Length: 566
Image (cartoon, rainbow, N blue to C red; front, top):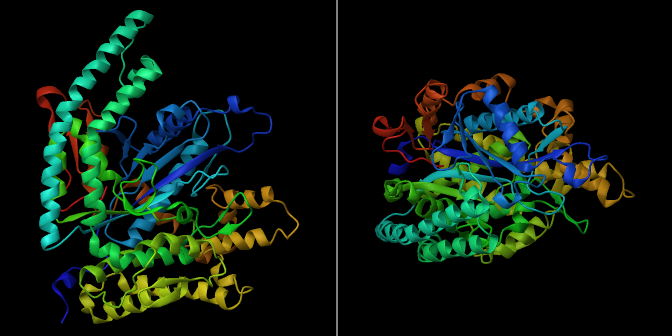
């Protein structure tokens, strides 16, 4: 008999994606580094082009964030100290949706939006955008996946909620302790302006820090971090020991082996080709991500923001943290160009979360050394390396086969009316897996993988250059494979193999205008279209918006009982 958790359709949980895009100037031959456009200017001009494309409103917690009528959001992923330097990253998140097919269409509409907006930006430079995971200097960025999932159950759910209550109290104390530091900052800014005899209104936090001496701002920022250290320690404990324990136990081997199917490939500085730059950078299984430079497989940085940054705006914003369903963020994810890889990446993970949360996971593999196993697999594009599990050593392909067979049995046992998109997920997962198996059996049999498995497509393009080419020529292939223009190498592959696209232009255009009707983002998109050009100011968050000012200010919720995954 099916378990109660199968009452809802399979592969129907809320999912979303956040992708960081890198920008570059196409022809730098006659330009010195100081002549290149500053990253902040590039971001602002791209945002202006996006505003010309569709209605937008500003973010509630982040003045540089911009919410779109299509349901997504744009953020500048660059440290303030880097704003005057070339480069920079633009992060665009999809709307939260209920199916892998909708997510793929939303993601491709965003790829199209950022590409066209970059080309239409009024910077005076020939700008291009790359959808990849690392640049020529080895900096790693890319993609995060988000899934609505059960954070804990039974005793662990009680413990989780007790710690959230503790964190809420700690949040109040941190806020109270922070007020004197903020007062000192305001006084110092006022004194510095008087001494320098400068005027003007400071609307951005970075503007205030730029006003005072650097050594003093360092002390103030350090003090704020010290105030929040107890909160960070408790959050780290909850993330590593309590939240999503069951999912992390049974899903990790899948994510580690998934690089063989969904990695995008990278050529490192020593000339070695690896299946995933993101995989090689991962150094923790579960952690906050970014607080001390760590790069975890399961990321809880959004919780840190919830309890530290957003507490200054609204303590009530943490109420949603008590819910049983929370946002599970996966940092081990490459920015795929291939439609099939992008679809399978999300669809198979969503299906396996259904399986795990229904207690059908006793036969799934468990890794003994997740991080070292991940690095070992990602370093071997021949797909022959075996890693230790609780049931002996297995290759990436063998682990994927185990998960595929478990998912296939799970779907077969589910009532027909609850299977939803699961059969399509299995079909496409099988197609991607068979392409990798064909290459494993015969290294010359790459045709099934071209345009489907990104790392194999890229490796094949590099091999077509011959053995005599230098690192620079191969690295050019590595980077331009991800270029979102007609001159990008993946786009050229798709011109020759259009049948390997899963999303047509009509679907992309539809998602460019609005999110799916059953998405929580539908109300947000509708309100943005209504208020973007209105006299009433609208500031948006993923869960709610604030409309108006002063006494007429009101809060509008986008969702009621369901959680948001952003």
